[in-house]
Length: 148
Image (cartoon, rainbow, N blue to C red):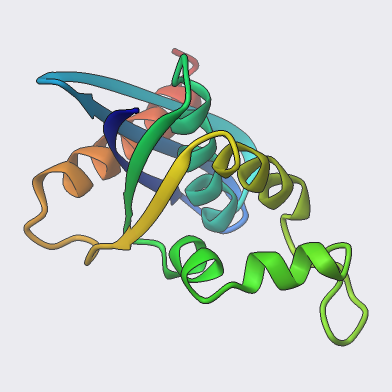
């Protein structure tokens, strides 16, 4: 199974508002950068979208290390929250819907196609690839706002 490293980040100019996501995939010495933006979203939705789009860009099942500065994303898998949400049909203990359940469902499905490990990195620190993903996400927001 091919081993891929995936760095991701999401950004939102105003929460909610125009948001962007960025991802860098690395495999066998190659690097692929992807990004995008949405008009009316949140930072958490962009964090999720970055991981989803990164995993969707893989052409075959891979072993993937996902590096993210989002505790929201990383902890959902590392602490098993996602599986509890799935069992409860994405309802919380107060019977309210889990926020962003549409994206959580997509991400859960993608993690079942690959062997995925989630790793938390410190945001806005000295991690070159996390900073690059942040730049991709914020540039996607700027480009979206300027109509590029």
